[in-house]
Amino acid sequence: AQSVAQPEDQVNVAEGNPLTVKCTYSVSGNPYLFWYVQYPNRGLQFLLKYITGDNLVKGSYGFEAEFNKSQTSFHLKKPSALVSDSALYFCAVSPPMDSSYKLIFGSGTRLLVRP
Amino acid sequence: DVKVTQSSRYLVKRTGEKVFLECVQDMDHENMFWYRQDPGLGLRLIYFSYDVKMKEKGDIPEGYSVSREKKERFSLILESASTNQTSMYLCASSPLRGGLGEQYFGPGTRLTVT
Image (cartoon, rainbow over all chains, first blue to last red; front, side):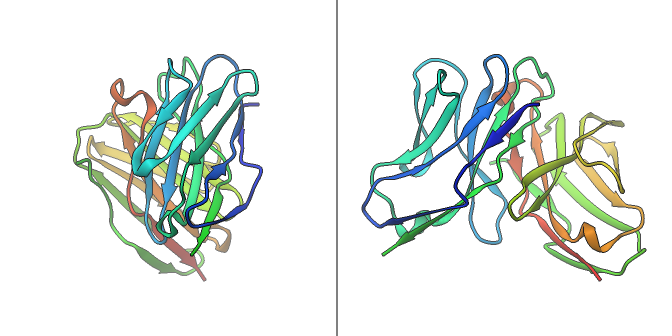
């Protein structure tokens, strides 16, 4: 079965430190990969996506993600965390050859950046 | 900017009531989706539609139905609301070809069934 795993329910980091939010997937072929962020009482906002090409993808708000095909991972990173980055982060995959572009979401990771 | 709007931010209904959740998008997108979001479970797909009057079941369609009479509007219907349908409901849309899967989300409707 196709799935996405976010192994950490919560990640805590001090402001100014680098952050990583982990994501691994189990999908055959070459899926499209996404990160979304949800601020309190808001819908999901698109952060970045990987389709093909360079394994390091840059997105909104200074976030980037690294695609690793051998480890089937797509970890979200930021060199220097801000308190305003505190939110719920979702990794998602779109299986290849799925013309409807459905997304399979992970369970979400809450990022807490302390001042 | 793409805008996806949902009819209510908060809704309280009683067990057994028929509930309608409305979603409207203004970007002429072909695909529309309904998800429910529960803590620790992420987003689960209830139904999606890739064209007017077309619909397909997602992962958890039981207890729900949908209607898409116009391209911009996608409605989620709870035929007889139950307490286990208390959740956050998110609507999303995406173009059929462009964007390669990127979906645009509404603000969500937090439904409480008592």
